[in-house]
Length: 320
Image (cartoon, rainbow, N blue to C red):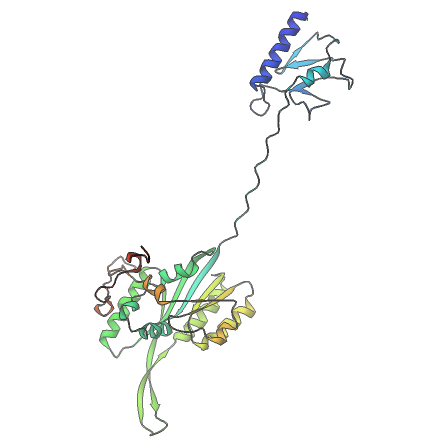
């Protein structure tokens, strides 16, 4: 190869370097020129043979094609020093893996919750959407509500109460709540002072259904975290069994509005929560929710909000 041709090749090499066209990662046809001895320092050159002293090239490749006849006068170190080394692309740091989300289940002692709401003396708060309460309980936590069980019983001695209760059950079932129904039985009561007796309606199966369902769901691995809404100490054995028999599961005791946590339940759980009156106000059903069949369920008149009542999300913010 003549000196003029060799200089032309060299000019082509440097021009390609400056334009950064030669890039092995971009194309196989644009093969980088790389020194087999000093590849980590000068990755743009490829010599089939080179001496550490810098002389004695036997083969030189340009853009993947051999260029023959390069004379030994060319200093390979000079060639390498004139090259522009390719900077390695920094690897993107691995993103931290978010913690896996947990399955949350809500178990409600309906009788206990009803009386706590009744004590607030605000009947419209009884039109409570338990599914909305569940969402507020897990808000901000890596948990998804997968199951809600509401244990209740219907009194059959008051037609008005029966109608309201049935409407409420239909509304709950319309948002995916599993409603387990017990019953009331008349039991004779006696006054210890005067000896008088009377028949008193007593709820049956509610507490038992709640206890069995929590334990059965734990055995079936239906939840990772169970929220137990009750202030009734009769559920303390359930809390202890979850703690002792299912160490990989968590039980959270939830106090109904206006109630304190039951100490015997609290002593067997790792976390507690409370349903406040503000939580209830934010979780009411609309005037006419739909049941599982898509039919409207009209709110009983007894549960209509008082005149002038405004939902929390429509109230002006303090200080605004």
